[in-house]
Length: 77
Image 1 (cartoon, helix red, strand yellow):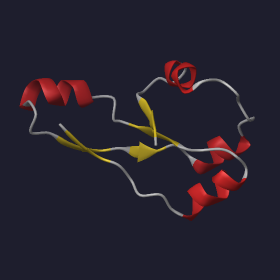
Image 2: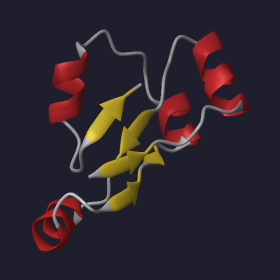
Image 3: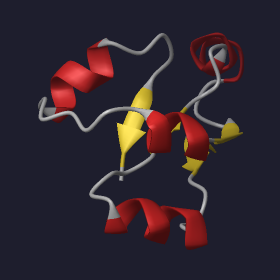
Image 4: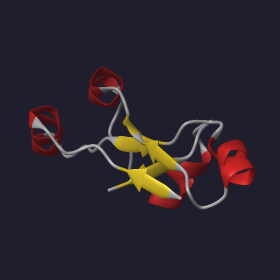
C-alpha cells in the first residue's frame, strides 16, 4: 500500500511557532481497500484541521497516547 502524505505548508509553520503540530489521518476504509486490492492500493492521507490544533490546549502527552485518543489512524510527521 502506498500512502501519499500531504506537504507541509504555511499553516504548519505557524503552528510550529506555537509549539504544536498537525497529525495526519488515513481514511477509515483503508483496511477494507487493502484486503480487497492487496498491496496495489494508493491512498492520500489528510492533515488534521488547523483550527482544531490551534485552539486545542498544549499537551505534554507522548505521541503514542495521542494516537490512541483519535478515532481514525493518526501519523505524526
